[in-house]
Image (cartoon, rainbow, N blue to C red; front, side, top):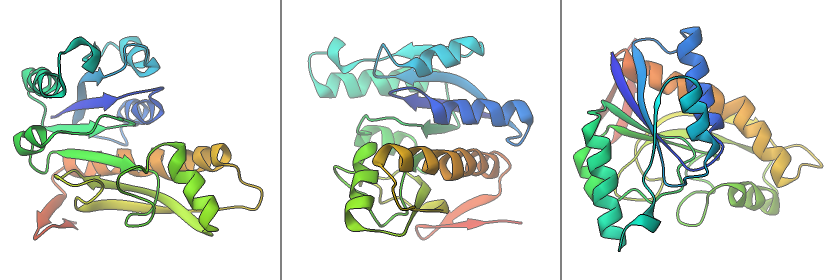
Length: 208
């Protein structure tokens, strides 16, 4: 059974998609051991508690500097011995010490088709604002492993979503979540949980 630790910052819609997929058994051989947020007011923590999942807040405001916060977050994670760390709407910059502690064991969902509209500064609504400003006809979401860069780790899954005339950033954000994020994040977890993914030379390969 794959033990998941899910890191969140806000409402937790991707967390809910994971919980629902486990309940429906579209994710098999996996369970959520803990949900951790940097934000004490994150509704995602309430979602976790409702489902009997340990819900913790590790806030940078409670530490004297970023290094102390990073160490506390890492130690909290390690105490649960997760097999996979899932960034589900987590706005914390994952420190190098965590990447090294969990090599190819941290995955993230990004609300665009990497390498488009990704990297430093591209998060949340900012991604969708940039997509609309550029006049892109297609966007989507990407699940990828996390490395020391920003949105540079090996890509696991991608799903395209149409940009429609009259879209606002908020409308597009919702469509990307519903049509892509909530589909490919659970699928990626299921593939990993069932040993169907390997990383070779920085490229993800799926085993049948």
